[in-house]
Image (cartoon, rainbow, N blue to C red; front, side, top):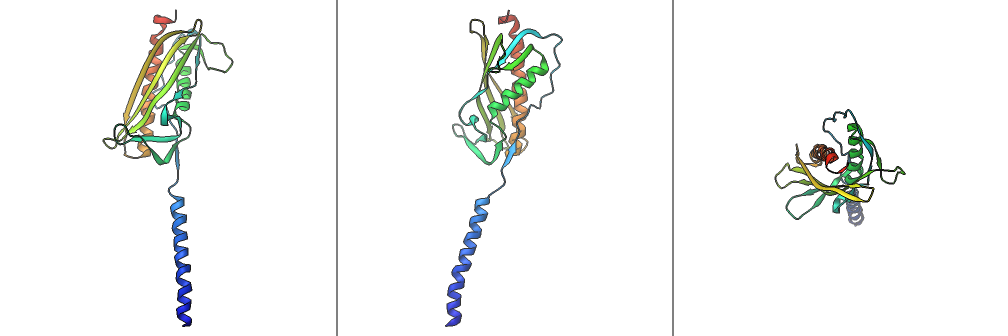
Length: 208
């Protein structure tokens, strides 16, 4: 009877310990990895002469899930999901804004570029909105897709000079968040090249 009673007490204790252990392991999950969106395109050659005037960059807006830091993927049209353990170190829209300014400063397209709200007076203003930023996994390992709307405005008179939607993509090397992050950086470089080439082409059309 003594042994039987002991087993009655031991079994619930062992079961509780096992369940507690499962809870700890299940709650811990996998480590979260933070990725940095980069511009991996070759640095543009600096122009011999900058155009006079200052270009102001408004903070890049973002649509839908692009507003957050979760990396977005899509298995089928009309469906968006996010990687559970993969995050951007900052929202893609904010990072695209930073990389665009770096690219423009390196190119020397304008006498100066500055962020809107910095207190600097400007001649032109560039408004951007990130419309899409997904890892399309319909056909693994998938493709990173970016879409950006840009508007160039002449601040004197608030005249809209040009508007365009840019799209860029790059194939993923592997079917996971790491492969997606690398592809997004490739696509970002291509997207920024399109935007800067478009800006350069606006000089004769509307900046005089």
